[in-house]
Length: 113
Image 1 (cartoon, rainbow, N blue to C red):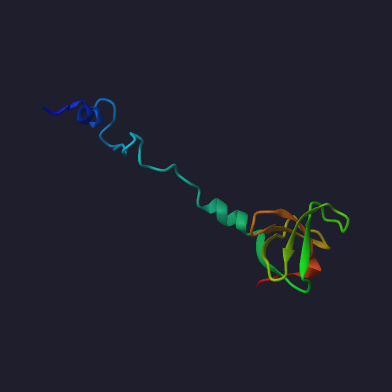
Image 2 (image 1 turned 45 degrees about the vertical axis):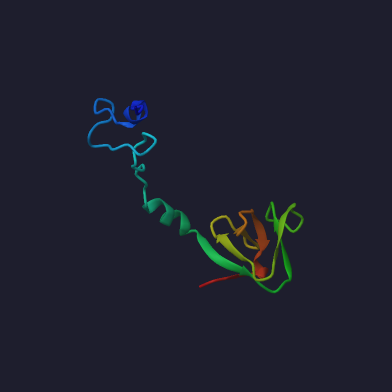
């Protein structure tokens, strides 16, 4: 004789789940929340791709100062994203491929056009 209690538990009770929302295997709705697709494009407008040039290793500093604390060191030809709005006359505000954020001297970053 089979035990039907397992099969009975897995059935969806129409009183619990409305007919327009089908639950997935865990009883959760399979729809994602709405996302404002315009927001990422607006955020990315201030960022420009760059690459480390004219030095073997470049310090990423916490502050836009030659004496600022070093957050990390990146190698020549490393790719970075440059925040143009957060940059100064002498330093670019950057985000490295590993996610480190800080400031690098402008003269060592070539911007992609």
